Amino acid sequence: MKKTPMALFLSLALGAGTLIMAGGCKEKTDELYIYNWTYYTPASVIEKFQKEYNVKVIYDQFASNEDMYSKILAGGRGYDIVFPSGDYVSIMIKGNLLHKIDKTKLKNLGNIDPLILEKAVYDPSMQYSVPYYFGAAGIAVNTAKVPEFEPSWSIFGRSDLRGKMTMLDDMREVMGDALAHLDYSVNTANPVEINAAKNLINKVWKPNLVKFDAEAFGKGFSEEDFWVVQGYAEVIYEEITVEQRKNTVFFIPEEGGPGYIDNMCILKGAKHIDLAYKFIDFIHRPEIYAEFTDAFGFPATVNIPARDFKTGDSWYTLSELSRVELKDDLGENLTLYDEAWRDIRMGN
Image (cartoon, rainbow, N blue to C red; front, side, top):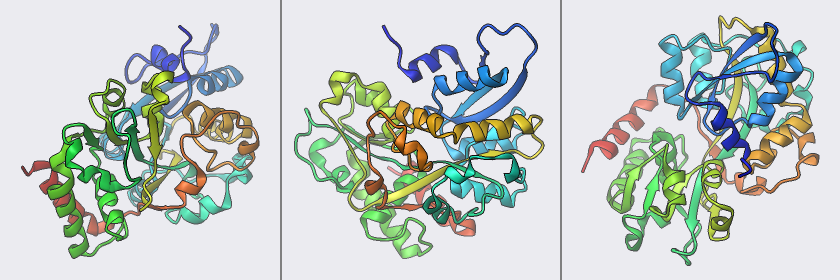
């Protein structure tokens, strides 16, 4: 069977910390340590970078910003490049964890959409981060099982679908969904609004859910254990078959919700800084960025010239992304969300 880009990657990366070797190279090579989200860099892109620069990439994966941040604080594994979302870029800048970017070493920064930089209020001049991708979670629906539905977060309030739905095990995502549905900001610090979102989740949505799940929602959807899942399009479409795609709709709800800009950052104390710059610049070559977005069904949100190189479909559009609001670093107000989420996750 012909392997998809991610299936090929998984066959190479048998667990965290696996070495992805430059094909056929027997001489001593340099190394680059990358810590990135699961399902986020195609094997073909890694292989091309390795071949061109005669390097070995050590590639670890994480499922959430919280997991990544905790591991970095605990010492990590000597990573050179990490891929935090914007709110965590802000947190990591404050924590003095990031290497300041020398933009003279990045000739492809001009390819980045200025509108994305306007959104990147956490680091608009790219002092510590270079945008990788602007996107959002959404909802996948099995239309063979659920032929009629509103393109809204309200679908999770449908009791007729009880036991067939999941939402992400992610505080900012789920709380942000409820806040957006109630027409509040996903970054509100108003305790009344946060409490209203908590009550909506606890009393209306949660009774219909099988679980909160940030790891196996794609597989559960593909096996038809779940008919409606909140998640990331690239994960869902990687798991389902070509035939299942005929009965799958993915949408970003009409009320909007949380969006994200994931970024490439060099960690302070990185041992392979020159290679890190080469990798960041490599990603923003238009043909490489197009290859990355085509592999996962993304629109080329960050890199403008890459849009002319794309050949594949996108599972959602730039216009759908206009509905979302980026998650900010909440600072001390994060405790309000922590308390609400603890009640949601631990309550009956």
